[in-house]
Length: 256
Image (tube, rainbow, N blue to C red):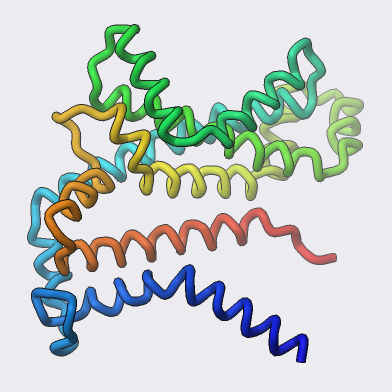
């Protein structure tokens, strides 16, 4: 009885979380212009989506920002995690606490604070401010993921390499980096997903001359949900799901 109650509860939770997404995905194949009634299966709105040049331009801009910001955040985050894990320095615990505080800060607080920083620095909102903001909120996630991976492997391997005469450069690139590569790739995928889906922070730091896909969708939804938006959201959800599943697979420890 308890087993069936547990299964029922989990099913209700998953239905609550993924039910709206399922409805959105189903109605993206609806032939009707309005999504209140089903009038047949069709790929019309996907065809219409790929013929919309404004949406495609916004999508390409989002991919560029997500790729560059995730790459930069992964490189800096990996080095930061290595420094925190292997070296003892003044303010180490404070630094790690600040990393977690950035992760837990509300998006609207980060968006406003970054906007004020850019205004005080005299930097006009655009691609550069958007890229900097995305690197900022992706960086802590990479540090935490890579730090957890570094803390999990045997340090005697590194000590043995140093005893055999390996320099710090060789130790990092030939021993440590291959061992933490799954966490590094997972951090990149997670950063890419976070950057691609962000709306609130991007709303504050981007300018009118550079439009990204999440903000484009947000402006379209204000005028009413159209079938093109349903099709676009379905594609984004599938891309995000694939990235998250790949990241989970990479950071999953192998069973002994």
